[in-house]
Length: 215
Image: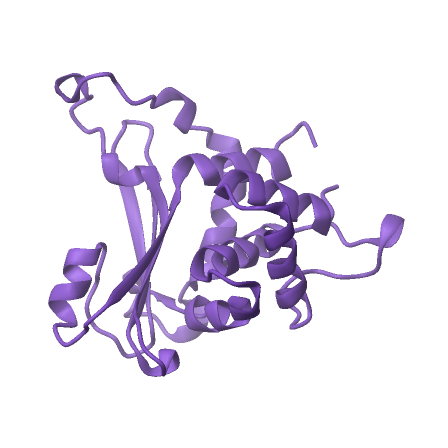
């Protein structure tokens, strides 16, 4: 059973940030009910994939722990662009879809078979470099972040070396955006676009450490 401390340490190690900083992020979002909590010690709650998704988004989307809930409010609840024709109850959100990725990575464990070849010419025909970025958060910088555009993209490898992607955007937005260039082109009046990237290796490390069979 992984505790909140385990979750914090594992995410910190995977993302390359300090344990102290990540734990501050965790405590901040736990106050708002975004991390499971039942008590401490033996009574502590076991961490879920959704807890992991919330913490990864909070850390990836903000530099300081005090901004953690701003990041979650900015990105949690974004809706899948592939489900636009469905009513909201059946549309996937960023946080729930990201949570689904953790056990999927454990069960499939594709990435160990997709080591980057030494030379580009030797890549398998369908090898997709883009999938090395497993989570991308993009937003227009500004004071009123709630009203400014923001997009998230989750991408994952297939067994053939290609990849699939799911983009997430606010309700009412009609365009699918998968990278920063598309973002900049669509929102031409944006002066500064922020982007935070989480690698496939980082998500794999979190997945196997928290939800692998060894735990």
